[in-house]
Every structure is written in C-alpha cells, then in structure tokens.
Amino acid sequence: MYWNFNRWIFFSYLFLLLGIELIIFLNISVFSDGIVRLTQIFGKQFWVECQSLWGVYTLEYAYIPGRPPSTQETVIFLIFCCVAWLGVLRYKRTAKPYFMWLIYTLFLFTVSCLFFLFLPSFFPYTSQDFAWFYLVTQIGIFISAPLILGLSLSVFSTSLGVSLLNLIVVLFTLLYSFIFGSVRYILFLYILQKFSYILMANLFFNLGPLVDVVYISGIYTYYLSLLSKKINLQAT
Image (tube, rainbow, N blue to C red):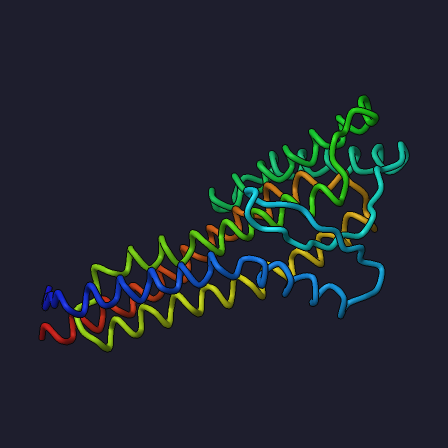
C-alpha cells in the first residue's frame, strides 16, 4: 500500500480535531438546548426541567409525563411475547446477527412484562428519568464519537485533502448524531406516553446507545472502504 506520512499534516489534523473536541466541551449546553427547542416545535405537552451534569453544566431537558402499564396491557404484551418466542425459535433460518438481535429484543420485552406483572410498584424510573439518562448518553456519544472516529482516521491523514475529508466525516457524524438522537429522543418520549413504561428497557438498551455504535461503525467502515480504494489507486 502507498503511504506518504507527513508530520505537519498529521499534527495539524490532530490539532484541529482537539479544537473540535474543545468546542464541544464548551458548548454542551447548546446541544441540550437544541434538543429542547426541537421538542417544543413538535408540541407544547413537553415539560422542561434543569439538572446539573458533572457539577459543571446546568442542562435543560424535556419530557412528557409517561405512565406504567395496566395489568390488562401487561398480560396482552406478555401473550405477544410468548407467541413471538414460539415464532422465533421455530423459524431459525434468519441470519444469525438478526436472530440474536430478535432474541435480545424479546428477552428485554419479556423481562419487562414479567416485572410489571408481578412487581409493578417497584419500578424505579419515570419518563423524566428516562429523558435525563438518554440525554446524558447522547452527550457522551457526542463527545466520544469525534474523538474515537477522528483518532482512528488520523493514521490515514496522508495528505491535506484526505485530512480535510476526515474532518468532514467527523463533522458529518456529529450532525447526524444530533439530528438522529433528537428524533429518537422525541419519538421515545411519545412512545412511553402512548404505550407505557413497559417499552422503556427496549428503547434504552436496544434502540439507544447500541444504535449509535452501529451507525458510527457503519459510517467509519463505509468511509474507510472508499479511502482504501483511493489509496490503492494512488499506489498503482
């Protein structure tokens, strides 16, 4: 493989990357305020609260008051889980990654149903707690994504053009993270209000940070494949 390492370009790239990271740290409240403003566009039923993060930032976050499931709803969901388990276990021709994902999803859903059926009064979280925890995880993704993605791409900063492309990919990932994270935030709160807290575990553990890891890995893999083709063409 053709490799043209340039120290000036490499360290300039790292300097710009750290600059982006510093801007993010100094404007975390802007990220949370942006999500809150988006929620207000979709409706006035969102309540807004403030909470301290790390003892440094005071962040706004929005939520819709949710509700626990009724006994009837829990039984209906549990019956659905039993039918789904039978279908998934009998039909194993699905590709293994999708099969494992279905097992994971049904496991979380079944545990939630059993918990609300036998111990509903012990459920410790509300939609307000969910909104705060989700916002904090999104801030964590917003901080870590450019750092991890940018550093992993730094070894490919073989030219000024490639370095600029790397930074564009990092900025695109940040923009995508903000938009996609905001849409999920609003959608999840509506789901908790409409379908109750019985879906909370699945929304957070299945469609929360796990999805962020998947799409960031996807962006990295796709961009790296294009970059590899470009480097190989230069070598020939």
